[in-house]
Amino acid sequence: MASKRLLKKDVNYVMGDIIDAAYIHQMANPKEDPAKSEAIVDEAIKEYDELITKINRRDVENKQKHFKEVQADLETKAKALIEKLNAL
Image (cartoon, rainbow, N blue to C red):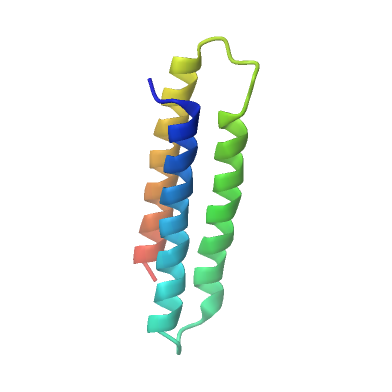
């Protein structure tokens, strides 16, 4: 079972890496419209907040199942954001 602390670290690292990649894309391509990569950054921040809120829920009966669901949710959201970033 993933612990709450490790799951929060995973969310932080994954979303942080996506945000870093978006800013690196902006710096590497200064002639492109920065609004597209800023939208990805905003979406990553929104997803981060949602995932942390899910992790901190206290009304969960089965924590192990809940943390696995949050981990799966993190993977799907991260993949979607990476696909958007790669499409730039």
